[in-house]
Amino acid sequence: MEIFTYGFMIQALIGALIVGACAPSVGVFLVQKRMALIGDGLGHVALTGVAFGFLTNISPLWTTLVITALGAVAVEIIRTRGKASGDVALALLFYGGIAGGVFVTSLASGRTNASLNQFLFGSLLTTSIADIWVIGVLGVVVVTMMVLLRPWLSAICHDEEHARVSGLPVQTLNLLLAVTTAVTVSVAMRAVGLLLVSALLVVPVVTVQQLTRGFSATMYGAMGLGLATAGGGFVIAGLLGTVPPGAAIVVLAVALFVLVAAGRAVFFAVRRRQA
Image (cartoon, rainbow, N blue to C red; front, side, top):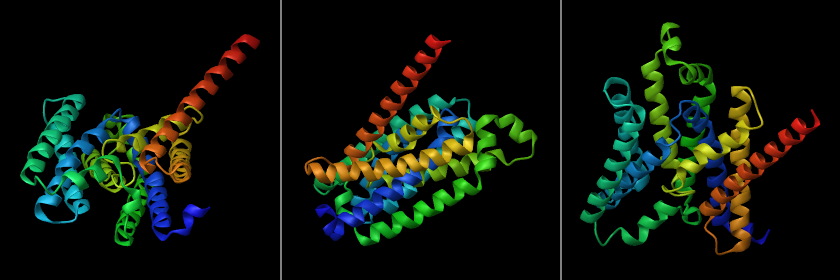
């Protein structure tokens, strides 16, 4: 294709593919723990990290990584040690994140307006070689950890009390999952933006869940679907020319979910009628 004759397009595609495979590997555990919205919450916190990057003239990727990791740890501590439930902890994350983002953004007024949109809605086409290396390394680390720790993480997602009785370090694993989610949000913000990052964490997982039964099959199937969706959405955006790649990726992911859900409903309706 002509769109792949440009070096920056190839760089952007590589970034999209890495994020597409990385996000569902974490999202499968979040969906199982009924914490699918934590990606949205951390996306709000990440806004504060981006603003700190502009304020301090440090790369927003690194400030976002630190701020979101701290936010993820705080939520996990509130959820497990405090009296607040998981949804209350997420609400605090939402409110605190967006308020902090607005506050710090106002301090960096005049330097953020043009660049902030790149992180809110994604800006794959401005991805540099250095960004690709950072995204690639972090993506490989996240996927490797999720695959290697899958048996233990799936255990705490199904039943924390049973996992604790079995001798698993439940608190450590929960904190690790929270921090890994923060890393994934920081990596994915260049692909789809902070406002849409939760879609890549959740939608491929819930789509594949309708077709699979085992946890492993769901995890690897979601990673494969995320990879295909990221690549397909990027190509669609390139062919249309005026559509941001992040939006195209998410729209394609949601369209596939609707298609699979509708097909599954029709299939079971026909089976019931035949029976």
